[in-house]
Amino acid sequence: MEDEVIINLIIMNIADIFTVFSWDTLLAALTYLVISVSYLLIVPGLIYIYLKSRWYVASSIERTFMYSLMFFFFPGVLLLSPFLNFRPKRRQLNI
Image 1: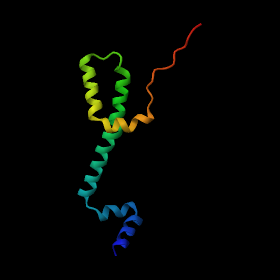
Image 2 (image 1 turned 180 degrees about the horizontal axis):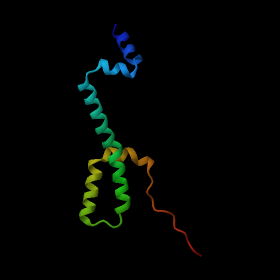
Image 3 (image 1 turned 180 degrees about the vertical axis):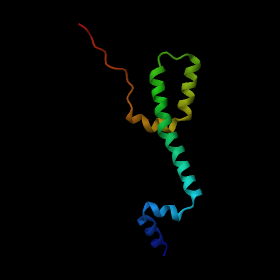
């Protein structure tokens, strides 16, 4: 009996989800999804862009702010780190 319920939940289409779950449940799930995506992907990406543009010209107070952002959003920064490369560009030597 329980296996049939699980199989039916897997098979049903998107329109049936709105009839099975209440609006409060769907709103809570959507809220959790938006918060987690923004915490793990969007805000750390913006932090990387900010760090790239201000790293060499930041004052000590701004650098403290940068470190606090890195500390607070560390899981997302760690998740994005393998895909981003902000190494300095190779110098061209004129001989």
